[in-house]
Image (tube, rainbow, N blue to C red):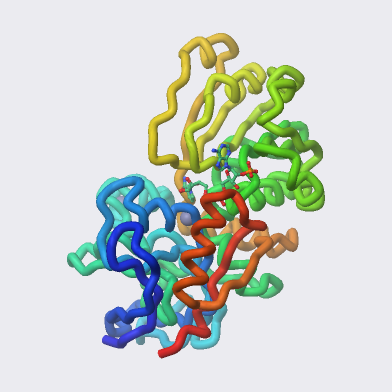
Amino acid sequence: MSTTATLSVPTPSAAFETSTVERRAVGEHDVLIDIAYSGICHSDIHQARNEWAEGIFPMVPGHEIAGTVAEVGPGVTKYAVGDRVGVGCFVDSCRECENCRAGEEQYCLKGEVPTYNGKDYDGVETYGGYSKQIVVHEDYTLGIPEGIELDVAAPLLCAGITTYSPLHHWGAGPGKKVAIVGMGGLGHLGVKIAAAMGAEVTVLSQSLKKEEDGRRLGADHYAATSDPETFESLAGTFDLIVNTVAATLPVDKYLSLLRLDGAMVNVGIPADADTYHAFSLAGMRRSLAGSKIGGIRETQEMLDFCAEHGIGAEVEVLAPEPAVIDEAYERVVGSDVRYRFVIDVAALEG
Ligand code: NAP
Ligand code: ZN
Ligand code: ZN
């Protein structure tokens, strides 16, 4: 066992504080990672504020982890000390169910082990990346290719794969019109990735405030959803809409933007339920779907794709101080983030 410094929330919605947690001893197939940066995902906020379900407190959020290997267990073959590695939203899965065997561990039928706010299969609580070190099995550790700096790589481990996976699954590419709804942490990476895949990309944002950035990141078009004209001029346009919004939306209006056989995929997970009318789907054989992060194999594929295309997140690096993290959470909730906060956890004292 070892003790590591963390930033944690003692009770739901409480302010952050510095604390420590115990990490397990490095096992046969484990790697000990010195975490350099940990991204702030909107899911961290949902969980730290108990917006989804009863969380486990104290909570150390963080599932966008990038760092270097500090120690390896004797049976480790994939990584060596000094390697640049990442950890995403889960740190174990059953490995036996049909979804695990298919490389879709995020849909493990036994339930994958979340990086934080969960329990290992032996019942021990998990604590995430807002900490200096973490111990993870090598099979659930990703390699960060040369060419992507660790600060801009960290958000790829959740925001990157969460947008890459549905874009890939639903065939974003040349000749396809793709809309990304919401240009925050997930959305801005969705724009970069969809553009790199060759799709014609439109950002649907609440306003035109971030239009210049959207176009710089690769969007061909940019429209404001606060303008009713947007829903008229873009009716029946898209093959695929990836919705990254962390709030409920008027789903029927968005479905009306899909062409025949188009799909709207929700990756944003608001606290409350959305509603829609079946006519919005039936009329144009449209689909409404959802998608959750991605499996280990696909996450590595995404990291390699991003390295090849020079894609990293646009980040604002934060000092690892509780008040700074509290303020960052407020800014994310207020859509005031350009476009992902990452915490310099290596600078945590202790
Ligand atoms: P984020 O950085 O806060 O981005 C969300 C964006 O949605 C905002 O930047 C804003 O973009 C837009 N938005 C916010 N409130 C809105 C409203 N009331 N109406 C319309 N648009 C609004 O959050 P994120 O980290 O990207 O995460 C987004 C959601 O995805 C969260 O619910 C998170 O839990 C979920 N998530 C899901 C998965 C998964 O596996 N499915 C993985 C990670 C995260 P504009 O300013 O451009 O309008
Ligand atoms: Zn996340
Ligand atoms: Zn499984």
